[in-house]
Length: 224
Ligand code: BG6
Ligand code: MG
Image 1 (cartoon, helix red, strand yellow):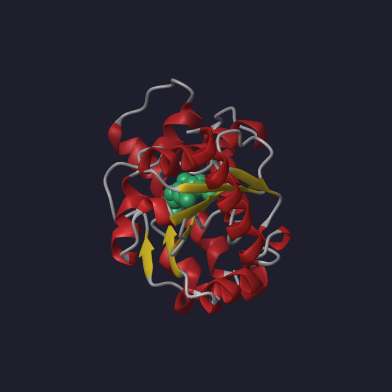
Image 2: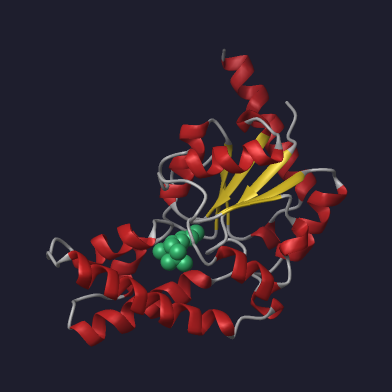
């Protein structure tokens, strides 16, 4: 087995923007008197802005103009947090892991549902690591559809079976599996479908990961 590409989700894997998304939705919900809390927010991880709003509304119907206004307002709140982001907001171990991967000749990509992903990479000062950036503008069908990861893998020129997706959301892991990628669940306790789950990238070295995936592939080959 050969691994030639890594594709990272951004929010919750590279940096904790998941918290900023939550705070922005919570502020909107509080202003509009919508029942919403941190536990509800778990269902919003990894899905698009539109799908997040749908889930936040829990079946309540609003007209399209109101929906657009809510999403714009939430995005203003979110971008306010984003402006304050610095390289210190990288999650532990991320820069070391990216350095190791590059040194090993692995091509690196981002597969984030966020339309703000490019700005976050600039703020974190890590844009230069990535050979391809798939974001909320790249494809129509969002996670758990595999489209975004396939789009990014195409730009990396690496087939899915030679690439690993790193994700903190089950929707993203399901997208990776649907696309035929290897998958690593990062940081979240509620991931059940990934090939491997780690508490964070600080807990993993590139060579350890490649060894573990090779062992997994060998077991599968033996099992037929
Ligand atoms: C994903 C986040 O990466 O991007 C979601 O996990 C977020 O929480 C989605 O809703 C869309 O982000 P944005 O920045 O386009 O609203
Ligand atoms: Mg995420």
